[in-house]
Length: 182
Image (cartoon, rainbow, N blue to C red; front, side, top):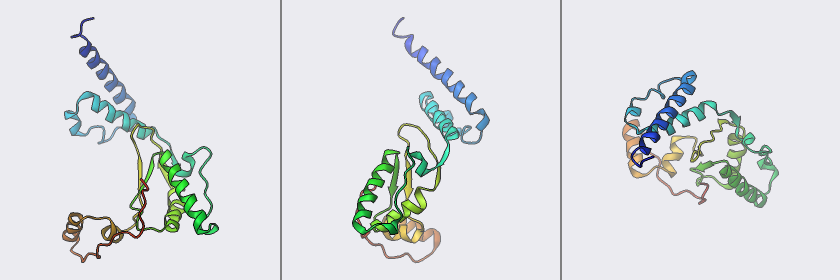
């Protein structure tokens, strides 16, 4: 086989994969599959995109605690003293990272507040567990625009928000706690 015929075979393989992916996606067909920007994607990128959509469609929606084997159970926040809670929080964040669950916007929360968010909001929440390389579930620990504007929005984001909503902004502050939850 000559060197010049190899790219043609790869292209044929890519086209066959593309047709297979499109066939498998047919039951889930919607606008994301017919996205006009896909016309400009190189075939390998399009196939990767289609494979990620297929993985999403087939992924089970499970409570995050059930993404672990055995399911991740942590003690209630009120059952722990501050020292035990802090060490349990660090272990829990590491376990979440092991399943590609990353926490962002956590620096305004104390350890106990963040632990409560994990215990009350994150672990029981049903999310799709998508097994695609490089895929992460980011959980933003901000529940309102005021907190985001106060601690996390940069000057440009703050200005845009103010122009869009015509409101007075809260004073920007540095978060009280520094942690690398990512």
